[in-house]
Length: 79
Image 1 (cartoon, rainbow, N blue to C red):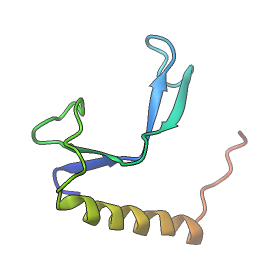
Image 2: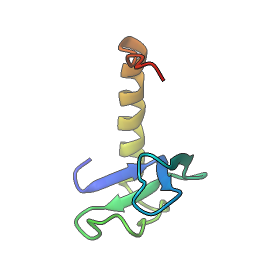
Image 3: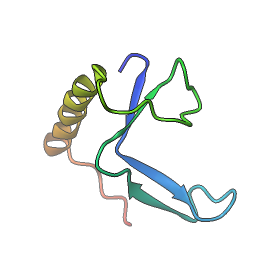
Image 4: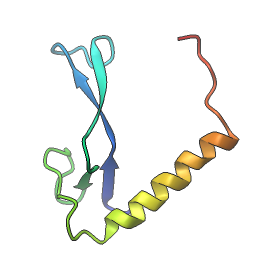
């Protein structure tokens, strides 16, 4: 949303240059990682979740997006 991006899950590579083939998906923890893409376009340091006005708005957008998966479930790709 605008210049902010929120992560609730991250991909952790288990070997160099193996981002898809040898990686795990992991939850970020108790609070989502929030990044300001104008200040940190490489998403290297979260801005923190305390006193951030956008966190509630991003959370609402995330819940709205997740609700669309109930109406339009993802296709099974055979995994």
